[in-house]
Length: 235
Image (cartoon, rainbow, N blue to C red):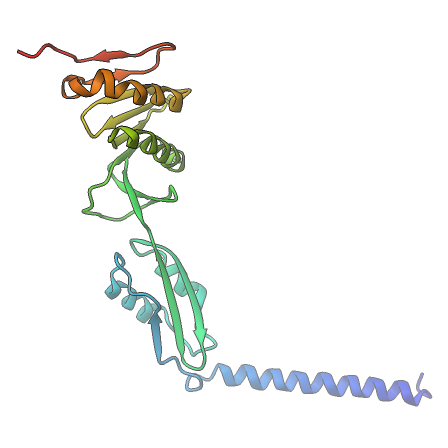
Protein backbone atom coordinates (compact mmCIF):
# COMPACT_ATOMS: atom_id res chain seq x y z
CA UNK A 1 0.00 0.00 0.00
CA UNK A 2 2.83 2.40 0.91
CA UNK A 3 4.22 2.02 -2.61
CA UNK A 4 0.88 3.17 -4.15
CA UNK A 5 1.40 6.90 -4.70
CA UNK A 6 -2.11 7.49 -6.05
CA UNK A 7 -3.71 5.88 -2.99
CA UNK A 8 -1.50 7.87 -0.64
CA UNK A 9 -2.48 11.11 -2.38
CA UNK A 10 -6.18 10.20 -2.08
CA UNK A 11 -5.81 9.53 1.64
CA UNK A 12 -3.89 12.77 2.15
CA UNK A 13 -6.51 14.78 0.25
CA UNK A 14 -9.30 13.18 2.28
CA UNK A 15 -7.53 13.99 5.55
CA UNK A 16 -6.89 17.55 4.40
CA UNK A 17 -10.52 18.00 3.40
CA UNK A 18 -11.72 16.64 6.72
CA UNK A 19 -9.39 18.98 8.59
CA UNK A 20 -10.64 21.98 6.63
CA UNK A 21 -14.26 21.07 7.33
CA UNK A 22 -13.53 20.60 11.02
CA UNK A 23 -11.82 23.99 11.22
CA UNK A 24 -14.67 25.72 9.34
CA UNK A 25 -17.24 24.08 11.61
CA UNK A 26 -15.35 25.19 14.70
CA UNK A 27 -14.99 28.76 13.47
CA UNK A 28 -18.67 28.93 12.46
CA UNK A 29 -19.85 27.45 15.76
CA UNK A 30 -17.71 29.89 17.70
CA UNK A 31 -18.86 32.84 15.59
CA UNK A 32 -22.59 32.21 15.86
CA UNK A 33 -22.32 31.74 19.62
CA UNK A 34 -20.63 35.06 20.20
CA UNK A 35 -23.17 37.15 22.16
CA UNK A 36 -22.37 40.32 20.25
CA UNK A 37 -22.68 38.76 16.81
CA UNK A 38 -26.06 38.53 15.02
CA UNK A 39 -28.01 40.01 17.96
CA UNK A 40 -31.80 39.86 17.95
CA UNK A 41 -33.28 43.33 17.61
CA UNK A 42 -37.02 42.65 17.48
CA UNK A 43 -39.85 40.14 17.71
CA UNK A 44 -42.80 40.87 15.42
CA UNK A 45 -46.37 39.61 15.78
CA UNK A 46 -47.73 38.80 12.33
CA UNK A 47 -51.31 39.62 13.36
CA UNK A 48 -52.44 41.57 16.41
CA UNK A 49 -54.37 39.08 18.59
CA UNK A 50 -57.98 39.65 19.59
CA UNK A 51 -58.07 37.61 22.78
CA UNK A 52 -54.44 37.06 23.77
CA UNK A 53 -53.02 39.78 26.02
CA UNK A 54 -50.13 41.37 24.10
CA UNK A 55 -48.54 42.47 27.38
CA UNK A 56 -48.33 38.81 28.42
CA UNK A 57 -46.79 37.91 25.07
CA UNK A 58 -44.17 40.63 25.54
CA UNK A 59 -43.37 39.38 29.04
CA UNK A 60 -42.85 35.83 27.78
CA UNK A 61 -40.55 37.11 25.03
CA UNK A 62 -38.51 39.05 27.57
CA UNK A 63 -38.23 36.03 29.85
CA UNK A 64 -37.46 33.40 27.21
CA UNK A 65 -35.40 35.03 24.45
CA UNK A 66 -31.73 34.33 25.10
CA UNK A 67 -28.73 34.29 22.80
CA UNK A 68 -28.56 35.65 19.29
CA UNK A 69 -30.35 35.12 15.98
CA UNK A 70 -28.98 31.59 15.57
CA UNK A 71 -28.91 30.32 19.16
CA UNK A 72 -32.28 31.53 20.50
CA UNK A 73 -34.32 28.55 21.71
CA UNK A 74 -37.40 28.76 19.49
CA UNK A 75 -38.87 25.53 20.86
CA UNK A 76 -38.80 26.84 24.42
CA UNK A 77 -40.29 30.17 23.35
CA UNK A 78 -43.10 28.39 21.50
CA UNK A 79 -43.91 26.18 24.48
CA UNK A 80 -44.03 29.17 26.83
CA UNK A 81 -46.31 31.14 24.51
CA UNK A 82 -48.66 28.16 24.13
CA UNK A 83 -49.27 28.25 27.89
CA UNK A 84 -50.92 31.68 27.65
CA UNK A 85 -54.73 31.87 27.83
CA UNK A 86 -56.44 31.81 24.42
CA UNK A 87 -53.33 30.58 22.59
CA UNK A 88 -54.02 27.41 20.60
CA UNK A 89 -50.84 27.27 18.56
CA UNK A 90 -47.69 29.23 17.80
CA UNK A 91 -45.55 29.45 14.68
CA UNK A 92 -42.14 31.13 14.95
CA UNK A 93 -39.63 31.72 12.20
CA UNK A 94 -36.36 33.60 11.92
CA UNK A 95 -36.12 36.67 9.67
CA UNK A 96 -32.47 37.25 8.84
CA UNK A 97 -30.52 39.01 10.15
CA UNK A 98 -32.03 40.11 13.47
CA UNK A 99 -35.75 39.44 13.92
CA UNK A 100 -38.18 36.71 14.97
CA UNK A 101 -41.64 36.53 13.44
CA UNK A 102 -44.36 35.13 15.70
CA UNK A 103 -47.79 34.05 14.52
CA UNK A 104 -50.38 33.14 17.14
CA UNK A 105 -53.40 30.94 16.51
CA UNK A 106 -56.14 31.83 18.98
CA UNK A 107 -58.85 29.58 20.34
CA UNK A 108 -62.31 30.29 18.95
CA UNK A 109 -64.61 29.68 21.90
CA UNK A 110 -67.69 27.61 21.10
CA UNK A 111 -69.11 26.85 24.53
CA UNK A 112 -68.51 26.68 28.26
CA UNK A 113 -67.29 23.29 29.43
CA UNK A 114 -68.48 21.84 32.77
CA UNK A 115 -68.75 25.34 34.23
CA UNK A 116 -64.98 25.49 34.64
CA UNK A 117 -63.39 25.93 31.21
CA UNK A 118 -64.13 26.60 27.56
CA UNK A 119 -64.24 24.38 24.50
CA UNK A 120 -63.18 25.59 21.06
CA UNK A 121 -64.62 24.83 17.62
CA UNK A 122 -62.26 21.86 17.27
CA UNK A 123 -63.65 20.30 20.45
CA UNK A 124 -60.58 21.08 22.54
CA UNK A 125 -60.92 22.17 26.18
CA UNK A 126 -58.87 25.17 27.25
CA UNK A 127 -58.63 27.35 30.35
CA UNK A 128 -59.73 30.95 29.82
CA UNK A 129 -62.41 33.44 30.80
CA UNK A 130 -65.02 34.77 28.40
CA UNK A 131 -67.85 37.29 28.67
CA UNK A 132 -69.45 35.97 25.48
CA UNK A 133 -72.93 34.49 25.60
CA UNK A 134 -72.14 30.85 24.83
CA UNK A 135 -73.98 27.55 25.16
CA UNK A 136 -73.00 25.22 27.96
CA UNK A 137 -71.58 21.74 27.43
CA UNK A 138 -71.77 19.25 30.29
CA UNK A 139 -70.08 15.89 29.94
CA UNK A 140 -67.49 13.40 31.21
CA UNK A 141 -63.79 14.20 30.98
CA UNK A 142 -62.48 13.49 27.52
CA UNK A 143 -65.88 13.81 25.83
CA UNK A 144 -65.61 17.42 24.64
CA UNK A 145 -64.82 16.52 21.03
CA UNK A 146 -67.82 14.17 20.82
CA UNK A 147 -70.16 16.73 22.41
CA UNK A 148 -68.91 19.38 19.98
CA UNK A 149 -69.56 17.14 17.00
CA UNK A 150 -73.12 16.33 18.05
CA UNK A 151 -73.83 19.91 19.10
CA UNK A 152 -73.11 21.09 15.57
CA UNK A 153 -75.43 18.48 14.10
CA UNK A 154 -78.22 19.11 16.62
CA UNK A 155 -78.01 22.88 16.20
CA UNK A 156 -78.26 22.58 12.42
CA UNK A 157 -81.38 20.43 12.76
CA UNK A 158 -83.04 22.86 15.17
CA UNK A 159 -82.26 25.87 12.98
CA UNK A 160 -85.10 24.72 10.73
CA UNK A 161 -87.61 25.63 13.46
CA UNK A 162 -85.71 28.71 14.73
CA UNK A 163 -84.48 27.08 17.93
CA UNK A 164 -80.99 26.85 19.39
CA UNK A 165 -79.27 24.66 21.93
CA UNK A 166 -78.55 26.58 25.14
CA UNK A 167 -77.14 23.57 26.94
CA UNK A 168 -76.20 20.06 25.92
CA UNK A 169 -75.67 17.33 28.51
CA UNK A 170 -73.97 13.98 27.99
CA UNK A 171 -74.56 11.87 31.08
CA UNK A 172 -72.09 9.28 32.43
CA UNK A 173 -74.41 6.62 30.94
CA UNK A 174 -73.98 8.32 27.56
CA UNK A 175 -77.53 9.66 27.31
CA UNK A 176 -78.10 12.99 25.59
CA UNK A 177 -80.21 15.89 26.85
CA UNK A 178 -80.79 19.23 25.14
CA UNK A 179 -81.89 22.47 26.80
CA UNK A 180 -83.36 24.71 24.13
CA UNK A 181 -83.59 28.47 23.75
CA UNK A 182 -87.38 28.35 24.34
CA UNK A 183 -86.95 26.66 27.72
CA UNK A 184 -87.78 23.10 26.63
CA UNK A 185 -85.65 20.12 27.64
CA UNK A 186 -85.38 17.29 25.13
CA UNK A 187 -84.51 13.78 26.26
CA UNK A 188 -82.80 12.01 23.35
CA UNK A 189 -81.45 8.95 25.13
CA UNK A 190 -78.41 6.93 24.06
CA UNK A 191 -79.19 5.93 20.48
CA UNK A 192 -80.76 7.28 17.29
CA UNK A 193 -80.43 10.80 18.66
CA UNK A 194 -80.55 12.56 15.32
CA UNK A 195 -83.57 10.56 14.15
CA UNK A 196 -85.38 11.37 17.38
CA UNK A 197 -84.55 15.04 17.07
CA UNK A 198 -85.72 14.98 13.44
CA UNK A 199 -89.07 13.66 14.65
CA UNK A 200 -89.33 16.56 17.11
CA UNK A 201 -88.44 19.10 14.41
CA UNK A 202 -91.11 17.64 12.13
CA UNK A 203 -93.98 17.93 14.63
CA UNK A 204 -92.86 21.02 16.56
CA UNK A 205 -94.46 23.70 14.32
CA UNK A 206 -97.83 21.93 14.35
CA UNK A 207 -98.23 20.57 17.87
CA UNK A 208 -95.73 22.22 20.24
CA UNK A 209 -94.86 25.70 19.02
CA UNK A 210 -98.14 27.22 20.23
CA UNK A 211 -97.66 25.88 23.77
CA UNK A 212 -93.84 25.94 23.92
CA UNK A 213 -93.67 28.20 26.98
CA UNK A 214 -95.87 25.77 28.96
CA UNK A 215 -93.85 22.66 28.10
CA UNK A 216 -91.00 21.73 30.44
CA UNK A 217 -89.64 18.70 28.65
CA UNK A 218 -90.20 16.40 25.71
CA UNK A 219 -89.15 12.77 26.06
CA UNK A 220 -88.26 11.44 22.61
CA UNK A 221 -87.05 8.02 23.72
CA UNK A 222 -90.21 6.29 22.55
CA UNK A 223 -90.13 4.26 19.38
CA UNK A 224 -93.25 5.69 17.72
CA UNK A 225 -93.92 8.94 19.54
CA UNK A 226 -92.91 11.18 22.43
CA UNK A 227 -94.10 12.26 25.86
CA UNK A 228 -94.65 15.86 26.93
CA UNK A 229 -94.11 16.88 30.53
CA UNK A 230 -95.11 19.97 32.45
CA UNK A 231 -98.00 20.97 30.22
CA UNK A 232 -100.69 22.69 32.29
CA UNK A 233 -103.90 24.46 31.42
CA UNK A 234 -103.80 28.21 31.25
CA UNK A 235 -105.96 29.96 33.81
